[in-house]
Image (cartoon, rainbow, N blue to C red; front, side, top):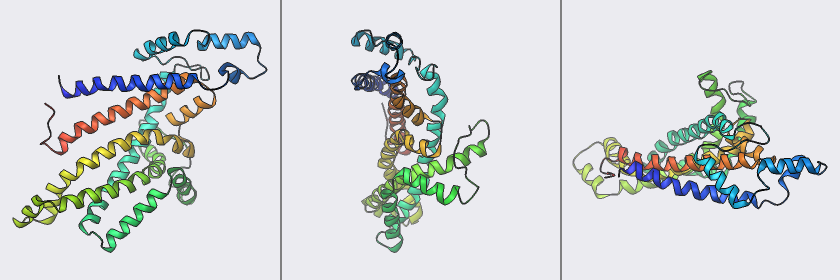
Length: 313
């Protein structure tokens, strides 16, 4: 059986486990959901009608099996607060979150990889110490605080970057980039700081290997040795961590979307939590879990691209 098919089959139990935990965790939330949604002064018949719409008057096991059956067909149910299918709400907001998380990871990798390599080649020099100090600052500043600093320092002072809002790539690619730059920078700074340290450590480890000394003894140019041999081996652990971090960024975008007023999955999830719209919460959590699992699969496939010695027979 091909590797991709085996990995896709392995995703199913993961999603099922997340779905099961999410479903039962939300069922034990304290309080009467119908009463919370309609208020304590609501009429009993209205409360009973809402409980019926939510399926709260049916056995828990039956509701779980029905929900799993609908979810397997891509039907996450009807949102009570939006009065729209949950899958339609997710489809409308998923591109925003993917754009923010993907742009943040791209900025992090573009900044971290060269800085890590430079720091490793000049280990314990002033350049290396400056890179390490900068990464320490980046790790210490939370993403939401970085977002606020960027709004106050750049967006408010310079009219280049918008303070709030989002423009779809298909409508205007330039405006899409302007609206995404600051959120991606705020979200990606902490990830870049972590990747700088990882890149430096992985490159430094490879630079002291025997095969590097052999390549140097043959008279190969140092830049060629680093690009051709060192980076290829150092990229494997960097790719692994970057893939995991991209999955975390999908969840971490929740706060940044609030700071910059982006209509992504994060805002949808928070609205679902505030309004006790359980189907929305379940749908968003499962969507993020599926994205996380698929990203891990993509990272595994990239191993073979980076290092042709790795095969999946």
